[in-house]
Length: 335
Ligand code: ADP
Ligand code: TRP
Image 1 (cartoon, rainbow, N blue to C red):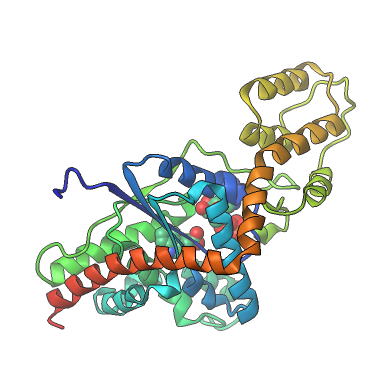
Image 2 (cartoon, rainbow, N blue to C red):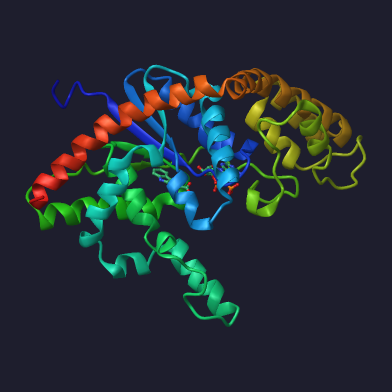
């Protein structure tokens, strides 16, 4: 195979740090599934369980979340022959490559990383020691993330804008490795940051995020989703009055068909629709979208052995690729 007929390798990771919500689905999983629908791509998607360790999750909770996220990814359009779903911790070459990247990573580079700087700033604000509660896992997070990416020879990495700096660091480390050792051993990836994808608002109108506790869960039972949608904050404008597009409209735009969106937008502009009716419509639209995904998810959850085997397949694929990259790096370094 030559470089030109090689399929594009797309890679991304998702941390098992909470329950998946509609924002994760609309902003990360669905766009990835759309990329994966192109057979010209080979897609590697992993649950970043090693990264999650920095927060010291309860082991049983971490194990459960890892399974849930893996099942959700498979249920949301990523159960395809050109997609490899795996657990980061089950591909040992990744952690080994991270160890090989350490000597080419300048400490100054990591001092400038946003997540670390934010943790230091929070300590300063609270009048604590600057390093309070900061472990080396958090500090060197960008190195492990670079190993995730470089270790799989990824071409493109779809991520949210908040991850742009991490991608720059991965490129930096590939270049630093090339300067320190002979030639181009590690492929330079590029970030794929989808600007057209809107940030979904949560129940209180801020960005839907587990850190704000304002999420609508992706895989919950219909009555839970319905009750959660009822809690979306609205004002007291009566049904007949015109309204500005709000959280409900933003959520409809993410899940409804074009004519439903147009219709609701018109009735908002001209008056003639109440929040109760809009919430009921939104509930139905989301349920229609999510119910086939939930059914598949529940099936996967009910058969843990089959899920495990499916992940093992992904892990074998990923390991084969990562072992090759690791061997290249070791040879270049004289190991
Ligand atoms: P959270 O903000 O809930 O902690 P994460 O930061 O773990 O979510 O995000 C995981 C992925 O989901 C990222 O790719 C991120 O860009 C995407 N994502 C999270 N929240 C939203 C949102 N409200 N709208 C669109 N995409 C989102
Ligand atoms: N840091 C990413 C996040 O918090 C998750 C992640 C870990 C990742 N390794 C990756 C994303 C490699 C893309 C590629 O969302």
